[in-house]
Amino acid sequence: MDNARYQKQILFSEIGEDGQQALRTSRVLLVGCGALGCVLADAMARAGVGHLRIVDRDYVELSNLQRQMLFTEDDVTDHLPKAVCAANRLSRVNSSIEIEPIVADADFTNVRRFAKDVDLILDGTDNFEVRYLINDLSLDTGIPWIFTGCTGSHGQMMPIFPGQTACLRCLMTNPPPTGTTETCDTAGVLGPAISVIASLQAATALKILVHRKSESGMTTTCNVPLKLTIVDVWGGTFRQMDVSKLRESSECPACQGGERLWLEGSQTSGSTILCGRNAVQVSPVEKLRLSPEALAARLKTAGSVTSNPFLVRVVLSDSELEMTVFPDGRAIVKGTEDPAIARAAYSRYIGT
Image (cartoon, rainbow, N blue to C red; front, side, top):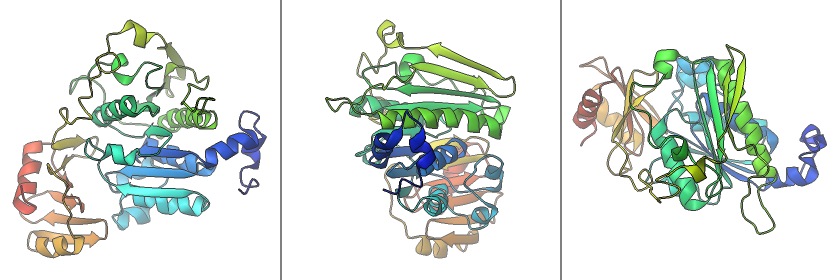
């Protein structure tokens, strides 16, 4: 291992050479590579985490550049998936680690495979359905994860050690009903808020990875503060809520009752409104294997088509909709927030 690269990090007494070696042998799953995920991916790669698996379902758009630090205008022009762009960028930052980009929507059919052999799961998502899925997965596998979210100028973060600490459902039994909480559609989001809360998440991740194993080989809480951290960068406030006793005092259906509603697929939908995008994601019941080249040829009569090895984009000539289709059959229909309209367009041009 080239310690010269990590000299300043090794000099930090809480890491040292042993901690750096622990990072080198660590494997991390990052779910979501938008604003939060970009900060996390960059921090993990530069710190020397040995294997970084990045799962993201989306592609780079111009509006991302205000806060998603790994992407450039060239990525927008090339219509490239975020996971691929992030891996390309970070491989030039640190060529000594393994970066595995996966262009996919994490759901109950594939998330176990994505989490295989990892030591930690990082939440870089922007929706609660995936967070509850990760929470179920964590409880079922014993892999710790860090919940993080950000809207407006506010960010929140909480480390979760399955079987030892409160989980997401201890904090919120069910996702908040649609329309009852702020989203990036209604409140926007500040780049500095993303950077602050994601940096706190990254620091917590490094602490877990450096000290992740006890003598018995089990993942430990590593003296990580078991608190929900809430920051407001505009108001300049920082709060922490002690949730260490929440698991014992709650009747959590997941921790105490063993429910895995999201992991078993009973709490999922075939369409998802994408935050701040005026777009809906439509997913087939079963994953497909489409050829981008063949699909592009088939869609030429439907409108203006562009494609690359990762996706096909068509601007439909009979509507104001733009559809981006991925090889697994998943599509992002832009120009509407009505799932029924999106599903109708999908059915017409891709199939049922």
